[in-house]
Structures are given as C-alpha cells and as structure tokens.
Amino acid sequence: EVQLVESGGGLVQPGRSLRLSCTASGFTFGDYAMSWVRQAPGKGLEWVGFIRSKAYGGTTEYAASVKGRFTISRDDSKSIAYLQMNSLKTEDTAVYYCTRIVATMFDYWGQGTLVTVSS
Amino acid sequence: SYVLTQPPSVSVAPGKTARITCGGNNIGSKSVHWYQQKPGQAPVLVIYYDSDRPSGIPERFSGSNSGNTATLTISRVEAGDEADYYCQVWDSSSDPWVFGGGTKLTVL
Image (cartoon, rainbow over all chains, first blue to last red; front, side):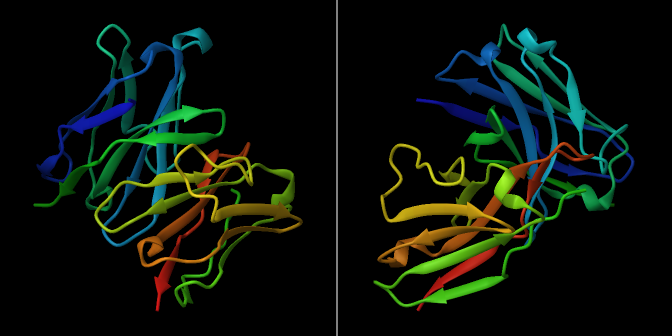
C-alpha cells in the first residue's frame, strides 16, 4: 500500500525557515517524481514544486510564488522528499501535501502538514 | 499562465446526477484529472486522463472532455459524495501543474 507521511509543520515567524519531510512507503520511491501541493485555509489547491526522479536528472521546478525561496530535495536511500522553505511569508500559511507524480497527475497524496506563518 | 474555471458550487438531490464543469482554453487538447476532497481530508484522484477511473472509484464517477469544457459526472449521487472537487491539467507554461478553483458539491 502506497503511503506518504508528511512531518515538520508548525508555527513559524515571518522571515524564518522550516523544513518539511515526506516519508514514502509501499513503492520504489526512487522511480517516481514527487511534488508538493499546498492549500491555504479555506482556499483551493496550489502546486508548489516538484522533483524529478534521478533517472530524469533529479532536477526541480517551482511555482512562481515560491521560486527562489523554496527548495525540494530527495534522499532515495531513505525514501524521503524534503521541502526547505526560507524567507517565509504570512501568505505561505497552508496545509502542505506531499504527492506522487505519475505522468501529469498526482496519484497519491499524504495527509498533509499545517504550516502557520505568524508573528 | 493557463486558467481553469469551475463553478463555486453545485447542488443535487440524492439519486440524481451531478455535473461539475471545468473550463479552459482548448482544454479538449489536454488531459484532465479530477480530485475529490472531503472535509478535513487529503484530495483523492477520482478521474484521470479525462475519463479513466482509478481502482476503487465507483463506476458512478465518469468524465468527459471536449472543446473548452471538461465535465465530471456523478450518477446516482449519494450523501457520501458531498465534497470539494478540483480539476487539474498540465500545461507547458510558467506553473505547469494547474488546478481549477474547486467546486463544492452539496447533496440536498
């Protein structure tokens, strides 16, 4: 059974940093691209960024709203994807979901972790 | 960047058919995926590649895509179908993964 479990969320002050983790199980993690999607309170879904599998270079792409501030990485030996968030803003407050990518879709989602940016 | 437009809400009586639309410029040339999100839960993929259903999704869920509109159809609606539904496409623009704004399905 595919499982994605996010961790690392919490309350953080504006301008500070936070790192989220996504621990995967039930599939060969290294074979898949992984993505982060967020949802602000009471709002819709917003794609944040993704990381390709090593077979496709392990490169990353980001939404314009987070580019230059957020970094996605992966450790295939531990089946973990990371989202490093720097220079956080109040508008980054959201539930952050880890997702598995297949072609152009997100076929599995984690339960999400809440990040609150507030002073 | 590419924009997907969904109605904010759709209401339907139990046992009837609900249709949720997703509008986009020439969306018929793209593959559309649909997600269901119940309150307090993560989204779940219910339709992919316009009309395919993942295993475990009831046959009551179907999809179509043509021209400038994609449609998610839920037949014989049940109370348990009440949720937010999001369409999603991939577009070769600045933010390639694009979601619609979501539609809240209310079962009367």
